[in-house]
Length: 173
Image (cartoon, rainbow, N blue to C red):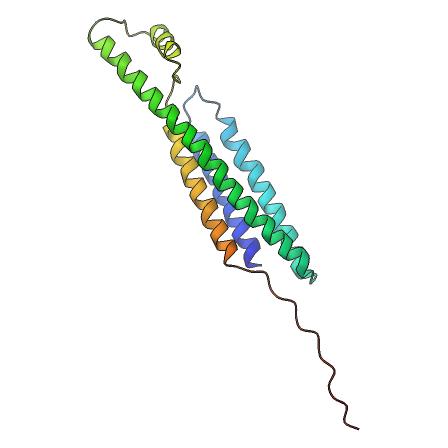
């Protein structure tokens, strides 16, 4: 039961992080992915937790242990996937900030007119994103951290051992 609760908590955290990223995204961003990826991940974790609860309730220790291992693998995979995406988003944030700084400098010197069309063309020329993904970077690093902590929690939490079968008592003859 403890293992399932740990999986349910991670699912709730992923949903909360996805909702935060969705509401924090600028209008130009593809914010739907901020709900879809954590939502699908949460459904997988909840399903795994329910299967684990059912296996434990029926005394299927081997199945519960395998589901426990699957939960650890999933948590570690989520931690790695979110960290990888966070690192990539961080590169995009730096590219955006550098392009924005250069554009503002050109506008300040009077070399470029501050219009949306000029800004878009300038960012495209530098192959920099039009908007900052800083909201996404922080959210992804946070989700990665929680997924890794979940992996550690699952690593140190083991499914219950089967009840020992009653040994035959010596007969008093």
